[in-house]
Image 1 (cartoon, rainbow, N blue to C red):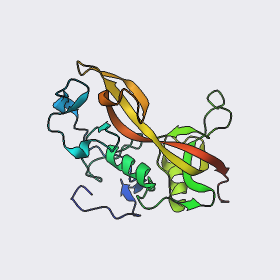
Image 2 (cartoon, rainbow, N blue to C red):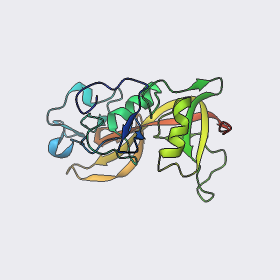
Image 3 (cartoon, rainbow, N blue to C red):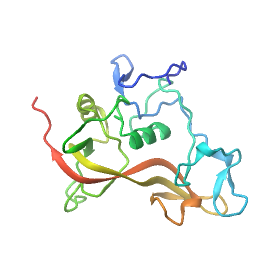
Length: 216
């Protein structure tokens, strides 16, 4: 929904500023706030964390607790360097375009992702096969926008994944004193699940091929 409470139609890209810069559907705005804070408590059995006013919607089907965030796209300034918690999750699980929120592009070689080409010292044999990815896919029209406007895509490369598998989550674990640990990936089924607070969904990209960008 927009800051006025109007739903954002799938396939429509919001813009911001006098230059009307495109703002990805999955990007958060300054008027949207993470609302975890003091709401975290130990579970009654002492085995993990939860919310004081927890509802079934706060956990996914794997039992992982998710951070809360208000939803009012268009409110304030966009933040291009991170993602809105719930909209990122919706795009990852529904394979929706992170830029416009519509269906991501899919052909015989798989779903389309625009990723950052790792520098030589970070590159691994077979990249991106098996990559743990927190960036949702894109549709073909929005692939160009993502490559030119996303600050983390210094060296963009187009990837097709025939089987992007839901792998787990990204976030951080808490101890019994409710002190947060470092950010980390957590695969579904991990023993630390009761103590983990997720803020991003993670896909494992498999059966990957690189795609040449369209001719200018």
